[in-house]
Image (cartoon, rainbow over all chains, first blue to last red):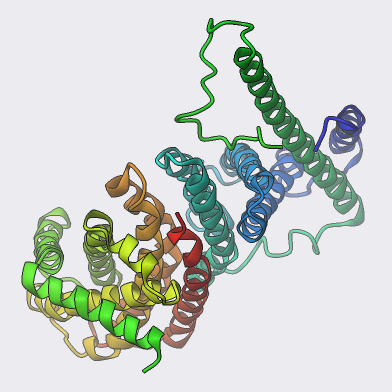
Amino acid sequence: MSGRGLKQLSILTALVLLAGFALVFFWVPMDADQGFKQKIFYLHVPLAIVALCGFVAGGVEGFRHLRTNDRSHDANSYVFIHLSVIFGVATLITGMLWAKASWGHFWVWDEPTLVSFLIVFLLYCTYYPFRYAIEDRDRQARYASVFAITAGAFVPLNFMAVRMAQSLIHPRVFATSGGGLPGSMLFTFLVCLVGIGLLWVTLVKLELLGKQTSGQVSKLRRALEAEGFGGSTEPTGTVGRRIAPNLEAQ
Amino acid sequence: MTPSRQAFAAIVGKDLRTELRTMRSLPAMVLFAVTTFIIFRFGLDRTALSGSLASGVIWTTLLFAAVLGINRIFLPEREEGGFDAFRLAPVDRPVLFTAKAAVLFLYLLVLELIVIPVFGVFFLQEWSGLLPLIPVLLATNLGLAALGTLISSMAVNSRARDLLVPLLLLPLVVPLMIAATGATSHLLDAGGPSYDKFGTWLLVLGLYDGVFCLVGYAVFDFLLED
């Protein structure tokens, strides 16, 4: 992966996101029941969908890493999960704001989607201490891939179990979040979903590029030191306790 | 016997023999569980439990007692070179996974055989729900054994072994606990067991067991490479 196209992609992302938010604020009709508060839906739900897809994609990349033993897949898996955790924080915050505005409480245990998302989020938070606890780089990459696969398989199962636990008592009011929408809302929602998805892709590319660049810099620095330039003013510091995957070998 | 079965039997036999001789895990798990019951007695301030409260106490206690066992299941392999010996042996690597999961399953079974009657004596007034509890216990044990073996083998080679097992395991077993408590709570109702959604919960448990047995079996190979 290189930096080519990143600029165009960023511009496209910004345009789509701007268009989506313009639609949200100026065009889409107010929700009859909740009014203006409901508009956080166009931010909250795309964030959640993109984060969950990112988690599953991290699992797929972990699988590919184990199959091919190619380090770049481990780096992809790490970056996917990392950004999805960040998107997950945003999802939880927007979800809690929405819950406070429309139900009066920051946290509602009866809403299965909220609870399942929290469990998935907590599981992926353990990805960082887990990586950090393994010293050997090869082993770290392999174990992280195993974690990504296990957790990726866990995501759908968890949603199913939590939903079942609730549906015994509560009817599924929000079950038709896509199908029950009128056309204009659905269109706006899809534009926002594409925008957030593009944002995720842009950030993934950016972070991968950053890792690649810093890998190259330390490689060049070491080459310089080997030839007697540069001295040892600064420790190269790439070995040891970094949890992000190393892309020097690319 | 095929070599895999031989290896399986050898590892299970070795682990059970060491456990019988050293008593490293099981007594600790049982003691922990019984003490936890006493803490629940005062924490909840109840002398009798039924329904969802009873199932919550049972499963919380069993889960945390299981974590104690899961923490130690690979300890002899790591400390006394069992991993190296196993890598040298000409057998399929997932055999170690199945054998360790079987051992963990047996530990949990013994734990429950002792601890559930104790729970009954302490808290239950209606014992008839304990017999249909058996399939729930077996299905949950299978899931805990598969996931526990997987997590333990990942954590044992890291620096923060004791910390990582509960950290990784607890979120992963939330669905298992949802299904287990869902099935158990109606069985322990004060007026005798009722079977509301019992089959569905067993199905969820079975699906969960199936998925994580397969995942564990498939990825275990990569955890043993060095």
